[in-house]
Image (cartoon, rainbow, N blue to C red; front, side, top):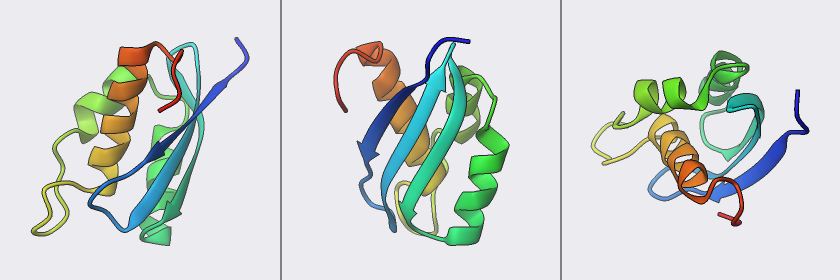
Length: 92
């Protein structure tokens, strides 16, 4: 396993204000959500650990929270999409 790369993503439109994700070999190693619904975000953290980022994007992109146009899962997908665009070489 390669050394994990940790990225930080400032969310938009959610109670969670920031997501920090560690990625190695295209898989989630760890994640931290700042703010938001504590229990739900702990659940997401456990469900994504060890999974391929492309699968996570596919599963979570477009999920909405109530009347909002986004959600914490959708923001995680946006974070991972941005990571893929930059190949981890540029701070997000």
